[in-house]
Image (tube, rainbow, N blue to C red; front, side, top):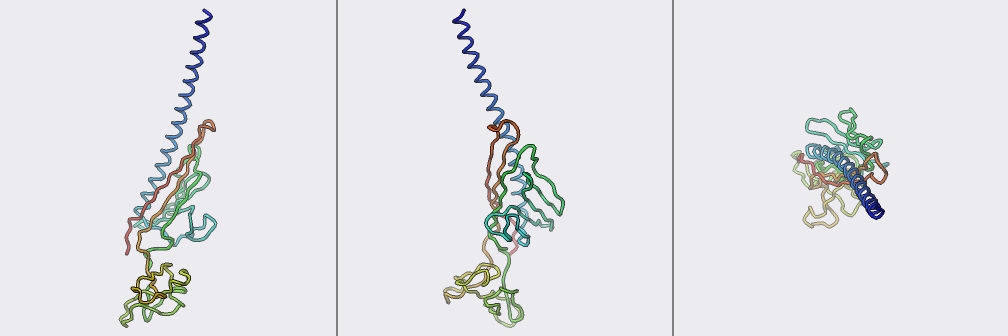
Length: 236
């Protein structure tokens, strides 16, 4: 009887441990699935909006402490084909959406905590902006090289031509479009180029970081997702 009770006790301890491990694994899996569900909803919503909208380059991106687009941004401003404005940003551990001035939360901080939301916008300037000039019109300050009228087309008909720039100079002061193409003149002059727009569609790389809420600390999982989406709005 003592041997039987000893064996039975050992088996019970093993079975209970296996049951607890299975229960803990199920709890972790449930929290992970809940986190992924929130992650997919937010990511798919933002990606769909990027595809059907254009990036608002006039927005003041200063959420990261730097004004303008440089490196990663903590907010993304979009304008759809109907002129509606959508801004996605992180606030209080939640992804917020500001649609035409109306704020709403896309996630619930009681279910999942957002630990990171970053947007990498490329190119950093509007690729549809064209810097042109003619005899009667020139771009704004810092538009053309030395802020003078210097065009590739001059037929006195009012048609515009692209500005000439210096690829060896500071692109920001040489071209308003920040894109001085030194090969556009066919190699005629190594010191001259054309202020051309970027020949790419705007695209956004989004990095989302989620953390499950509730349960034991060891059950809380942090998940990161990265995806790149191009705008399908073509304006050129």
